[in-house]
Length: 420
Image (cartoon, rainbow, N blue to C red):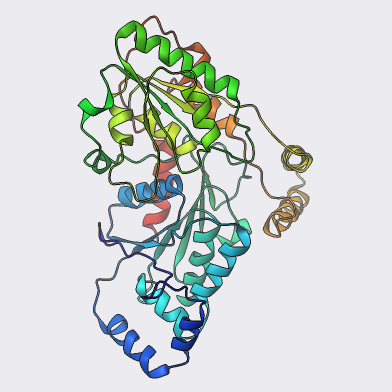
């Protein structure tokens, strides 16, 4: 997309057979036909964009990447890598198919704009996008700079810049900038596709935003039911209504647990190709929002809207490996800090390199702790635990303040500007 024009990745042939099908294999064996298909794709002129944004199936990651691109205020192109998530092995197979040498891979890449001239800056987030970003960097002769948001999926030194929000436990590095909060994006265009307000029940609205399963947390029916009950009591006392909105990861049983506590709620079920999306209307128009603590993007969208936000905190679920990884990280961070204070900087750098080596080989990755983000949001007065909601009175709206993460974000912008 160059300032709004998107290229879509279509991994199916015109007859709806996959690229790996027999029909596609036969097509690939005919070089004349392939060259004919390729010609109009490669000879057409297009404006060069200094910034590329790699978008995947993860909506929250995409919004943060687009937010950074928009704040940079430079022409940018969106490359969509948004095939559905279906396991690590299948995702790796699809990536290899896209990035492989040969005419078939070239046709797929041309169809989404993944071709020269290469950008100066690539913004990405997640394993899938990171892999494509490194491929672009190789094709560009290492002239393209990679900025990743969130968790690093390769050695830290492989990235030009890592933008880490509070939930990602990353060490201090010259190429790591820690933000006060994740980058949030104002998305007024979503509201334009929302249903009319009168179809969503009488106001005031008490909205529950439901996420789903993440590795660190387990969805707790008791916490969900308590939040639903508080929302129902508030709606009954104020003459309003309860609205429930699901996400891509919301399982059916989680929605059923919430609905069981509510009296005729309005429910919006997330679908990939929905004709409308009520999300922006809900976060702007609700009297209070209850959001599950597994989704950083939904929490930040709600907090930055000015609508009183309440986090439904989920119990931690960590296996032995996750516990060891977090404990090991704390031990090594404490150890390297002690070594630096003792003047043993060379030994501290050796410990750092060893930890990076373990992370890059997925032996012992840098951990994530969503509770750190919860604590930061609550400390800054942007949200409160759902258990503190008082259904007897309507909470007051806050003044919106989108500059709370400005110090860290300004450092990111200054670093990116040196490459543009």
